Length: 279
Image (cartoon, rainbow, N blue to C red; front, side):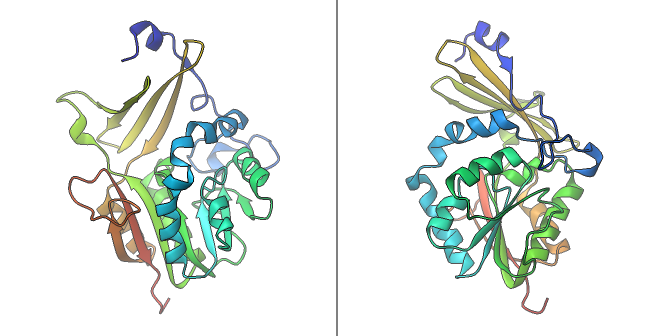
C-alpha cells in the first residue's frame, strides 16, 4: 500500500487541468464541444508508456482478430483513435482504417507511427469522417464511450456510429461493468487496482451515473503522480437501448475479446450491434 505521506503529497497532473483545443491548438468554446476531457501534449507523450502492458502484440492479438473478422474485408473507422494503439497494428494487417479523435496531440502521436491513416480531429459524438455511410465496422474500445459524460452524448455517439455504417455494418464497443458491489455500505468508492505501487480507486454518484477514477502512480524519485478522470458509466442493457434508438440491432456480447460468455460475474463486455440491411 502507498504510505500516507505519498498519497498526501501526490501532485495532480494530466487529467485535472485540461484545456479544450481545436486542431490548430487554439482554445475551443466548451459549449460547442463534447464533455470529454482534452488530452494535451503531456498526456499524449505519456499515454503509450502508461498503457504499455495492454499494447503488446500478445495483448492486442485477440482484439485485432475479432475486429478484422467483423470488418469482413471492408473499411473500418475507430472512434477515439488516440495514439494509434489499435489503429496502427490494424492497418498493419492491411485493414483499410480511419479514425476520429478529439485531441490533435494524440493524433500527432498516431501519425508519427503511420502518416497514411486518415484521422478527423473532432468529437466522436458528432464529427463525420469521409465516406460516411460506407464503413463495414465502427469500433470504440478501452471504455472510451464513458468519456462522454451525459447520456445524450452517449446516445448521439451511437447515432453517429450508425450514420457511418453501411447496411449490414457493425458497431463494437468495449466497456467495463460498474463495480458497485466492491463498495462498502455507505461508502461511494470502490478499489479497482493495486500492483507495484500503482493504485486505482473509483468514486460513484449513483443518482447521476457519474464516476471519477483516481490514479496514483509511483515515480522513480519516490514521488507519486496523481490523475483523476471523470466518466459516465452505462450498463450493458442501457447500451442496447442506445443502440435501438440509433436504429441498430443487437448481435453479440462477450465478456472479453476471446469471445468468452458474458455473465453476471463479468467485469467488462465487448458488445456488437448491426445496422439492418434494409436501412
